[in-house]
Each structure stands twice: as C-alpha cells, then as structure tokens.
Length: 628
Image 1 (tube, rainbow, N blue to C red):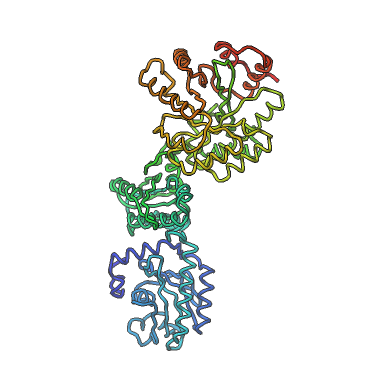
Image 2: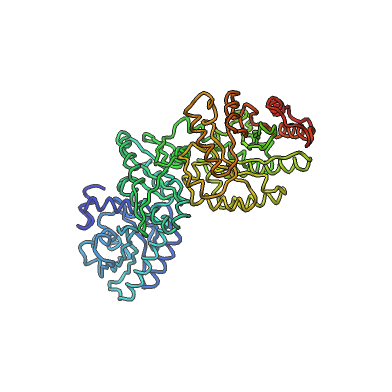
C-alpha cells in the first residue's frame, strides 16, 4: 500500500500494524478477481430486494484495491480503494454505515457511482468482521434517490452480513481454528510466489504426533481446544506478512517469505511454540509434539505452490512417529527418492487389493516366515511373519527400507492387513494339506494395533479362512506400551477374547516398565537381539539377560530369545535354561514354499519320532522348497 492510499483512508484505518493484521485476516478467504461467487450473489440479490435498493454487492478491502466477489447491477470486479465508499465504511466505528445523499457529501461527491448516470446517491453498508474481529469489507446497497433506511431494514441487512461472513468461513476456512483451509492456503501461496519481491520462501507442513490417541483419551472437545491454541500460536509466530493454514485434522501448513538466513531461527521458535505445554479446560497440563517438514526455494519460483507443500509433506512423513519430540526435516534428494518409493508402494498395495499382484509394475508385498524352535525339545514351535517387497528393479526389499515409509505415509495399516491376510491364507492352505501347522506371530505397528477397524478385520479373516485364534500371536513392543498404555491394554483384551496369543516384543529396549506389562496378561516375553547376540562374552549383557529372564519367570511367561546367531551364545543360553530361540543360527526367514517343505518333512517324521538334535534341526530348517 502506497502513501497516497494511506492518506485517503479514515484515521482508524491508517494504523500500519492494524492494517497488516487485517490483511492477514483477509488472506484466509480465497477471493479472486476472476469470477463471482454464486452463493454470495444470492445473498446480495436478497439484500437488494429486501430493502428496495437498485444495486449492491460485497466488497473486500485489500491493499490498494476493492475486490467485489459479488456484485449485482455493476460490472466492475475491482475498483480503486482510494476514496471508495467501502474504505470509509470499514474505517468507521460501529456495525452500520449510511450516507443519505452522496452528492452532498464531500467525501463521495466525486465518486463515479455518484457523478455518472444513473447517479446513485443513497449508500448503506454493514461492515464484515472476520473470525478474529478484523473488518474485511462490507455488504452494501445503493439507491438512486437519497434517503435513510428504517431500523427494520438496517436489521435485515445486518443479518444478511452475518450470513455473508458465515458463507465465507464455511467455504474458505477451517471450522475449528478459523485458519485458511488447504485450497485457500495454496491459492494465497501461489499469489505470494507470483508477486513477492523477497528472495526466498520456506514452505512447511506440520503433522501432530499421536493426536488421534490424544482425542481418544481426553475427548474431541479437548482436542479441538488444542487445535485452536496451536492455530493461535502459529498465527502469532508467522506474523501478518506470512501464511498459515489448517489443512484439516491435525495437519497445518505455513509459508515464510524473506531471507533464508533468518529462517533457521524462526524454525527453532516454532518448535518451542508447538511443544510448549498448555492447560486444558478441565485443568490438566498437556503438551503435543509434531513432525515438521520444510521445503526451501529461492524466488522467483516457476513451479506450483502445491509442489512446494507436497515436498514439505514428504519431508514430514519421513520423520518417525515414534520420535516423541518436535522434529524438523528438510526436503532433499533423499526424500525425492522416498517420494518415488511411496508411489510405488501404494501401487503394490493397490495391485494386491485388486488381485493383480503378479502383474503390478512395482511388484508385490509378500510374507516370509522365520522359524522359532525349542532346541531342548527338538521341535519347531512357531513362525514369525516378516514382510518383504518383491520389486522388479530393486529385488527383494527388506522391511527396514519401506516400513518407515509406510508408517510415515499412512500406508502402514494396509501393509499390516495385507500380511495378516496372507498369513491366514497360507495357514488355511497348510491345514487343508494336513500339515502340522504351528502358531504364527505378527508384529503390527502401533498405528495398526490401535486402528479402529483392526478387530473387525481380524474377525472377518479368521471367519473367512476358518483359522482358530490360538494359531495367531500379536507382538506388542515395549515402546508401544510406554507410549499408549491406556489404549493398548483394552485392545489386548479384545485380541485375547478371540483366542489370540500376546507377546511382548523387543523387551529390554525401553525402560522395562513392570507396571506397564503388569497391566494386561501376556503369553510370551521376547528378548531383544541386543541381549542375546554376544551374551556369552559380555558380562554386562549377561547380567541384563538374567534380569529379563527373571521378569519372565515372575509373570509366568514363555521366554523367547531373538537374534541367536552364534554357537557360543547357544551354549550360554542352554546353561541357563533358555531353550526357545529364533535367529539365523537355525534359520533366516523362509518363503511360504520353503515353509511347506519344512512342514512336509515334519509330517514325514511322524508324531512318534524322537526329538531332533540341534544339528538335525538346523538341517531341517535349511531344507529346499517343496516342488509340489
């Protein structure tokens, strides 16, 4: 806004800080100069008819122009701000502005609407107040004849002005925070990219961690309160010259224009703002954390606003949701490759859902099975299902490369459900073939375990494939217990009601919280690899193992040792009665065809055969896949 424009404003509009905040408020609405809004046109038409006016419209005061997103009786989409009726109406105090005879008013006697035919003289307007109270523009009407509206007519126009604001906010704003929705944020980001003279733009995507669980524990009203508080903090942090949007749910966005050197400090302030505790209405103090992805780009930028936000979203989704602190990650070449992987993974999931897995250009997800043995009894006691991605170009991709991608891109439940489906399908085939089937354990992610549809999907699959619940085991990691105990415990009870076994996985990697594992019954305690590998040669690891073994005995739970790879460790475990193990010493994960070969060999031995020795177990588990 230039000085000549400011001089033309009434005194209450000439405050620079107030004007900047008003413009920021205006940015929440996606007003464009190109087309009229039919919903607003309806309100304008109704206002004109209800008071017997000749023309009318909705005017938005923006920088040096007046935008008219709705107008009836005039063609202009925008008019100069200087000397306009709307500018004075916004600047006047109160909820009503009326000029009985504009031709006799020195402020407006030179206005083209007055001096040009048909010479409108009577003007009345209701200022439009946005969500935070700043005046955005007016609903106005004009008549050719001078006059004054009655109190009832003024009340009618005020009611319609409220309807205008409600329509704007419903269409263009998030209904909880009042911030710009996704479409509006992208609209104004694109305008900013096209018009800015500043050297750099930083676009950010904010994803709150564990917010769904927060809603389930504290209730949706408390969750909405948190969103409003965070919206206010973000708006204050960004300032009036930058952009903030609420994309929906627990997702926000921002765009900062300026020098890149200044933006690192801004991000540190943002982390502090987001993580600062807040007090809920019922009095408890809570805090939330977020994954923040950012994309930097110098201006001028010839790409789209959507591509910048997509890049920031990719960066945010690459941050593990298990990271319980506010973390920032910048988009780069590594994340570009990750974006390709997200796309290809979704294609593989879609192919599996549509039954075209073999023909999918990006391969398919398959479950392999790692045997679990009791070497003292010489028998196979179970299998753990481990997902692999059979990719035509990448080969056999391990879960450490794509599971974090799935977790960060909301694909993890689809992955876990696909594995569960294949496990049930494989077990049905093995049972129908008369093979000696052993229980299969599945390691669901926290998000999948707490997914609202997981119990219904599990019941459906057990019924569809006629699998007894006792043949499945769900693994609950210690970290899941520590983070979401209030939610995990009821879910465990629902699983056990279906006959499913429960194992506490990776025990010892967290805080070994006895209160947590005492909160629900479990069948097995799985010792993490770091307390098994090298235990024979490390007194400190050996001491921790004995502690974990004592905890299993205390809870009367079966102890299973993961990650057994060395014969010396096997001998050490045998000396302490830890006979149930899983690891490469006996077998890596096997394909379903190889598992059929193993089960066939066990069936051929017969139920009365002597227990297998350790060498015999190893030979059996390295058997070649079945040919039929």
